[in-house]
Amino acid sequence: MSKTIRIGTRDSQLALWQAHTVEKKLNDLGYQTEIVAVKSTGDLILDKPLYELGITGIFTKTLDIAMINGQIDIAVHSMKDVPTALPRGIVQAAVLERASEKDILVYKNNPDFYHEEATIASGSLRRQAQWLHRYPHHQVVDLRGNVNTRLQKLADNNWNGAIFASAGLDRIGVKPDSHIDLDWMLPAPAQGAMVVVAMEKDDFSREAVGKLNHFESEMCTHIERDFLKTLEGGCTAPIGAFAEIIGNEIRFEGALLSLDGKEKLAIEKSSETTHYRTFGRDCANEILKNGGDALMVKIRSELQK
Image (cartoon, rainbow, N blue to C red; front, side, top):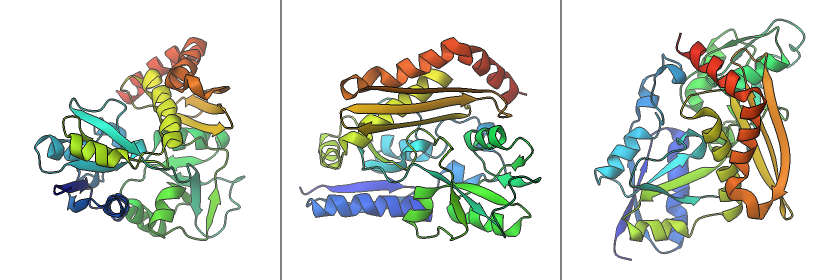
């Protein structure tokens, strides 16, 4: 085990926490490691909504290039940031055991603004659309940056609240008491899960990281990401998905919404775990047949305006 595995990560506090978590797990197995922090384009451009930047995998692209160029051996990502199609030569080596998939609302002053006019901040089309579907009388505004930047922007602006992934705030210990669990909001596919990718030809790193894989988390995130991939075909759209294993069954919930939240196509289904490889795709195809195709055409044309 003489080779040192170089772990590539973004340099935000959350990304570094994730990289150090993987580092400790590999060290505990007897592997030598080194953390290599790289700034990503997604962290540098904070004044444009993600969907306007026109790059699939804006948070992962820099690390992909570093890995292909041989500067790092593996990369650690929040799995929801990773495109459903990985670059040629890069493979998924492990999905770590998933943390909470939930979204939370961090509110200012008080949480009793639901029936009045209110402004909620989020850079995610999925969160914006689901919020407007439930609270059509509210306004949503864009919010970009890493977790700490977004919390600061919430403090500095006259907004009622902002939506965050529960897992991210938990991981770096910044979840405020002034929050509400959004149990009704469908998460981003693979939200709460961390993934480690490696070069396909790097057997040493791939096998080392493979020992960290949590199979249930891998199954559930595969279903959710397959659902996403089948629906959007490379286009950003408001899509939520969550799969969980109960006994020998997989329970799945998924939804596609219009950008303004007025239209919502949802599905709830169960299947045996043996069908997990095709289950997400099957659920997506059902939505596409029942109006999803037309809705995706509408979303694409609205995003190109």
